[in-house]
Image (cartoon, rainbow, N blue to C red; front, side, top):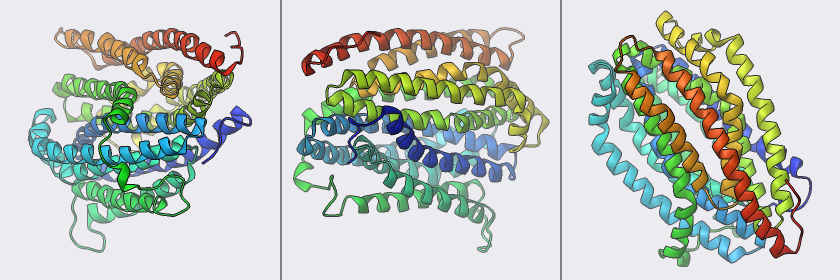
Length: 457
């Protein structure tokens, strides 16, 4: 365990962010390499994997429920130096991870055919998407175990094990993907299904490896069978903190489903261009996502220790870092959008759609960076409902007009991206107001309880 309640805030953020960033960079590299190889199969394959990848957002929503609740409660326990409570939370998170994982596996396998058929622009794309999901869904089910263990370690400020495991398994995934896809050395090419199978193998290795960290006798958190009996009180606290964050990701999945449905008449090229553009944006957002993962435990431990001034200092430093990063990435999307899209497809229509997408949505990068930091601060203080409110506002602000506009003559894809930019600005304004209100409520109480005066904002 690392005590984040002492020492320089900036140093803690940089150190913890660096560990997460290494992990994110390798994951991003995998996404891009995987997309590169899939692009060699054809435009339909890119569209199929992009459609299947939407399932990732559903799983992310569920893992977010588990991960946010675990990190927040463990970080609060660490700040209070309450080892027994942290141990109980960790073991209860393992029980929930098993329940969630089995649910995803069963539901996903039962609905994969109908999902592929309903979302694809043509039958060929649907068949490829279904092949991919056959192996991808089990991999998503196992993600819950990795998230539960990794989130507990982050709550303790221990990012290194997660970094080592994640980077190694990602490298394994990158090596296996082309071998299985094209049958190198095996003589049995699996196509897009090979990319999904490589993901499944890598996740299995990751789960087993992370498990070994908690089997050591000197581990701060260990598997304790007596703590596996369902504890509804702990579940209630974890879900109360995690569910709004999970719904937040679910809303993003709804948004993506909506966009894919609206652009379906424009053909597989439009779906592929949007899919590649989304992957590029996800790659560029990785540093600020890593920063968000660092903010939650740093601010969370200090919140648990009732150090309100350090919680506010964490927000200030993180916000400045996010703005600097996202400004650079926004400039990149204006300078070389076509070059980034062209790496993954040589189809002129795909490149045109992806380039237009990047140029427009990059205007909201700075606002999105601040929203990520705000969301992490809400997590740290144990109230994620404001994040859900702001995300729902954004989805409504863009979703309702898009559905109406898509039925009008002359509808163009660009209209979706412009509405998205406007909705993010609205989301940021609401998020900032709610965060400062939360500071006034939670940190004033925290400072008074600790006997430390609350500094003015």
